[in-house]
Amino acid sequence: MKQNDIAIPILPSRSVSETLVFYRRLGFDGEIRGVGDSYAILRKGPLELHFFAHRELVPAESCAGCYIRVSDVESIHGAFAQAQLPRRGIPRQDVLEDKPWGMREFAVVDPDGNLLRIGQTLEQ
Image (tube, rainbow, N blue to C red; front, side, top):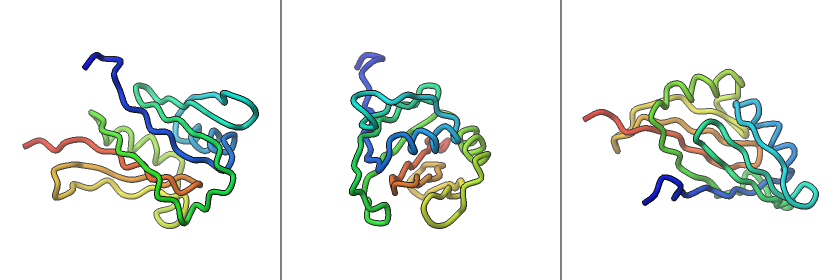
């Protein structure tokens, strides 16, 4: 694979402009693209997320999500923690934990119910 060969999640959003506001709190930059409030591309360093408008989305019923593998999960967890999201409900940020499957990870659920699980491989 070449360096530019990457997978980028495309997640649903009830309001792309409100999604942009939420992710800016987490340190992402981005912009709305397309006609109206229909699509956004957000970036935080090498991380990239795309969002499309899905006005009928019910956050509590959403099963959308992605896994983002990073090299320094602790710094990303700390940066996201500055947004002071609750630990329960929607939206939320979970605690950073070592998992039995060999990853150190945490999760963020955004206001639209999208699950972002962010982690790095534990040293063997």
